[in-house]
Image (cartoon, rainbow, N blue to C red):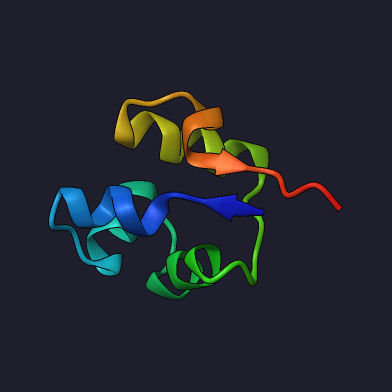
Length: 65
């Protein structure tokens, strides 16, 4: 799943650890999300969307296969 996490995080000058703390997950989870190795659960996707103040669709974009 494609996502804009790295861009949104950079705009706010947050580290992966900063975003992890705001979403109650590990830095490794944020890294896995950003690199496409892990797709978020629905509750985590909602939490991330709330942190950035954006709809889920603006952050996560399922790739067409």
